[in-house]
Length: 110
Figure 1: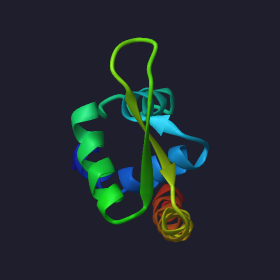
Figure 2: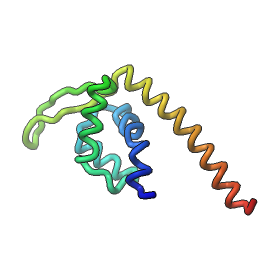
Figure 3: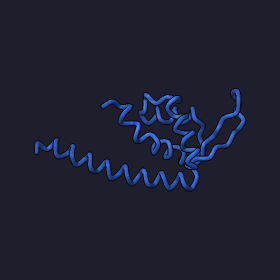
């Protein structure tokens, strides 16, 4: 299984968590993901997810002037987005515990 396949299911939650830290624009999201170790996440992957999140009312956008070219679209979480982030965290924690249990069992030679 490739990193891309594994990442597909968790990228939404990661984006919501970063947006929850404060308003952010698309390219900045890609940069932040990279600082967290997501090296292969391009803007071409991120923008379609942001468009879908906007349609699902998980995020709102605000167009702001930029000192370097055209205006930038900044993303913020809605209350629905905050609820979805909390649900993602709960699902992730359960999944992480389950996978850890399997891998620990394997590591102990059982």
